[in-house]
Image 1 (cartoon, one colour):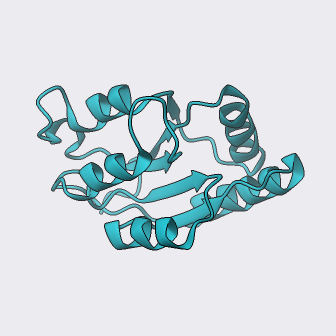
Image 2 (tube, one colour; image 1 turned 180 degrees about the vertical axis):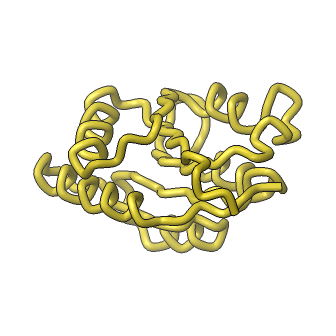
Amino acid sequence: MNRATPVTIIMIEDDEGHARLIEKNIRRAGVNNEIIPFTNGTEALAYLLGSDGSGQESAGRHLLILLDLNLPDMTGVSILEKVKNNQHTRRSPVVVLTTTDDEREIRRCYDLGANVYITKPVDYDGFANAIRQLGLFFSVMQVPETE
């Protein structure tokens, strides 16, 4: 595996404030990887799977996906399902960041292949702290090659 290949962080989050908070705390944890933000599922899926939906676009990319479940145009669960069912993106780690702490929803995300599920605490400090820890986690995590 080529360790020099940088991991690109794909952030799918429609709340501007949350997006800024996430980026700020990832940076504060010393993670300097490129972050590509999307505010809806349609654009994010077009980037990840290409206009034809084949996922060929992402072959060879090293991606880490931060996924909000509540998006304006589709559910994060359906994005998770598409990413994990595609041969080119299924190994990309997906971190679900959401305000939903429904047990069934959490189980469903793990069943579909989510790697980490983080409930956004309502308070700013709790959320910032969770993201800082996530940043530290990113700095040591290995992302597998895609084919």
